Length: 65
Length: 145
Image (cartoon, rainbow over all chains, first blue to last red; front, side, top):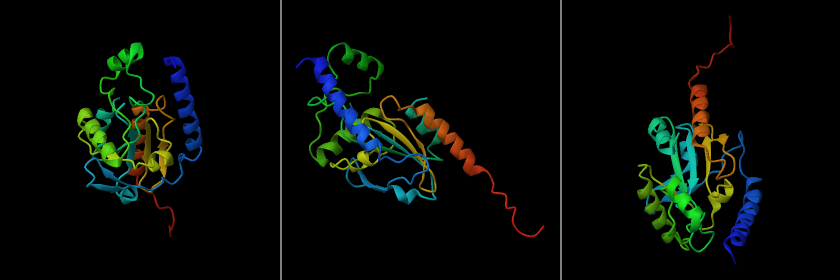
């Protein structure tokens, strides 16, 4: 399968994912879904709701590639 | 404005939470490390990795997240999404996305879908507007004259 065909297939797959989940994602004015995660060491925990009333939170989602 | 500048300028007023999610372009997936596209990406986004396989366990994911954190040198702790991608799905975060959450727990800014919607300058604007809003004193017009 050549590069262009693969790229289009992956791109379409991601577009479907984005469309599906973006419809459910919070919009401005919506309550931000709470979550609890651990850091890269697995030891430090964070819960979004713990910042309520303390500091506004900027979420920065991404990966290495 | 870069993310680094945002962190440096606003880290006292805003809590930044970088969240590592599923790899966008792993070697065993939609890999973009080869050819002209790879060369261009390496030139304009030198921090991007090209030799990462999609982590299959939370331990692998944390390892890559740590490597990413060390590479970017933002000096901000990175958190790692669960293997079921629950947080990424809740925020439709793939491949990259920005949000600002207010003191009341409500979304004040939701960037467009990434990668094209990922604009740190727009996040900065939202932060500026929000910080100005919360710094205004509340004038109480109720009560006896």
